[in-house]
Image 1 (tube, rainbow, N blue to C red):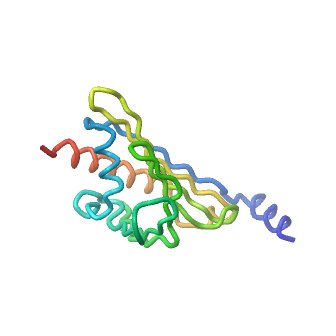
Image 2 (image 1 turned 135 degrees about the vertical axis):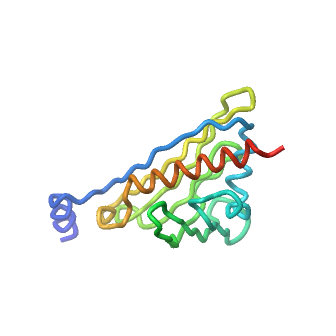
Length: 161
């Protein structure tokens, strides 16, 4: 029965994957970028998109997060059931949540060392699942929010003494 419902939804044009892809080069060492991304308490000082991220304990794999997003279209969204999924010092922070196959998102920050105290931030998200197509997740709005966040992070880090 579930397979029949899934097939019917997909045949009806159900989107099952929404990818968001952004990146920016920042003129500071990778460790500085990682500390800013994991320093959730300072997000309100610089982050126009993730305006509130509060961990439920030490920043570690499995730690729950309260995440509030302020989208460029004016919508404010509290994202439920978010957890840190991957954490590698100076290289990766990934958080996400949901039910795989039904509705799941993974928000990824990857850091590449470009040498000469420069870092490339690869800032992506993948929403996947049978019911993603029914969610209010406009790719153009989300991409704009991620770009704004990337630019704000760059300015915040490069303007520090």
